[in-house]
Length: 160
Image 1: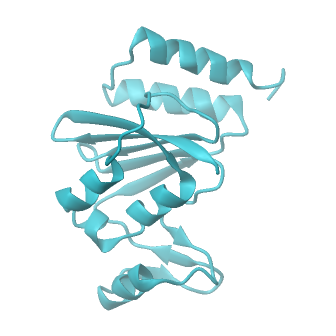
Image 2 (image 1 turned 60 degrees about the horizontal axis):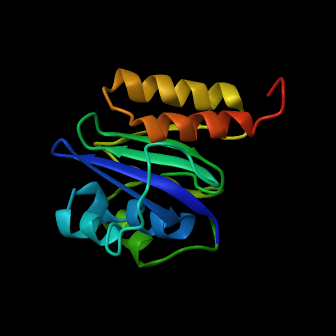
């Protein structure tokens, strides 16, 4: 299964874990998430697998309740979109709350108050932009996390 680092800042507390992309999709594409239901959020960190504020395997997702931003540096997840054929109960709830903005090709969800910043993890320049954005949002990195970013950067071929 594809793993991704997940970091959530909620009430100035930072939670870090590693989850499968499907677990992240399930958490974000939920009306409970949009409504900031704390019980829904804590379910994501049940049986916490220690994570870092740095990409792993498939990338990094940062959910910042302070700036109401989702930073998506991940292959395999389009935050705020549900593919046709993957309809579920949560999609019905988004329709009930009139929060489906587009349903022609895939379903585009209205995650307000969150904005989604999506970056392509296949490009080193996008990863560098994410790192700078996290600094601008005043996230603090441990020495171990900075090392993990360097490992991530080394994974790119020259010129990417």
